[in-house]
Length: 213
Image (cartoon, rainbow, N blue to C red; front, side, top):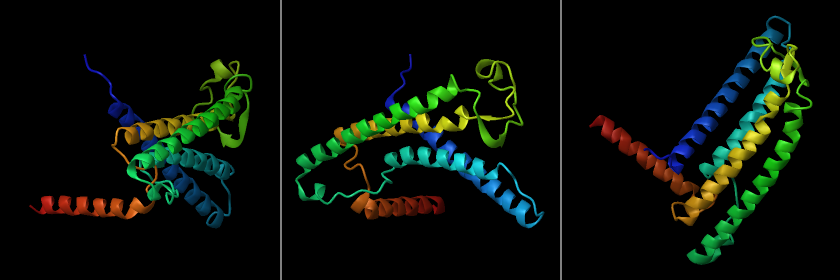
């Protein structure tokens, strides 16, 4: 019987984050470009373009925030931590992670409390402009008493809030575990950014040499 380990969970979260970020960024670019062409070439306008890009940007930011925790991409200040020995430094980093976990948990609670009414009592609320063209009957029987949605129900784009906060909390917990087990030393890149770039450059050089060989 196979067991599912933490590495598998991380791979799944990686796939969710990277796929979501790629789709959101790609659709934002496509919709914005189409709206520019419609405005300056055909003297027209895509009514739902602005609202669509706003929601896509929200998904991009929230998914990107959690992914940057994994890649140490967030900006931080480690001046005080660098002044103390390795042992106390590790405790300080773990304390920082614990505070981040608490903060992300509070954000998750607030996100669920905000989103949940739109998925239950107020599921009939629609967005302002984005039409429900492809699947107007999607979720209608469950959330809208059988009536087709003319525009996208709000609980769909708003789902970025609880999902993003859940992934963010998972990434902080993962980072804390990696730091506690000495697989990672810091929560942020900070002064280590140059070393990260150097390591990436060296890895690329080795791959190029292997390809030439």
